[in-house]
Length: 166
Image (cartoon, rainbow, N blue to C red):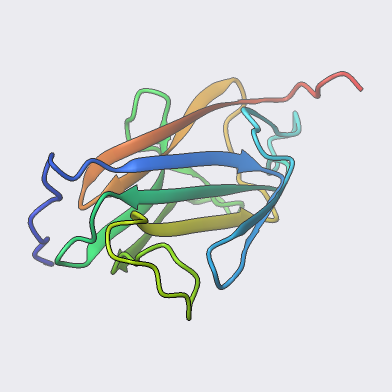
């Protein structure tokens, strides 16, 4: 069993920006290039196969750099926040969770000297699901960012079999 570090204190509030997109790419400087950002509705086929391809992007900013590494998790949950398992396409089910232990950086490009305290400590996370995921249609879900086990932000969305009008 892993011992978790003390959670971030309430005096260190996180600012989180998050969105769904058709595709996202993050370069070495943390700059994101997105196509179709702002999705709130994903479509699956009536046969229950995977959703359309999509991506999740989030940036987490803290006013100061924490003294210890922070466990940053991107987790798929039900609309009410309960844990959810989705079909894996092979008859089983999976929990969708991406976890990283992160040392927050000053938010500047490598090689650029920015004075301490000018930029927040940041971390960018992006996940492309190029084959989609096997969601149940007619349900609400949310992606959530957790910092040291505490939910810092949520991004709700809905899954349907209906395609938007062209």
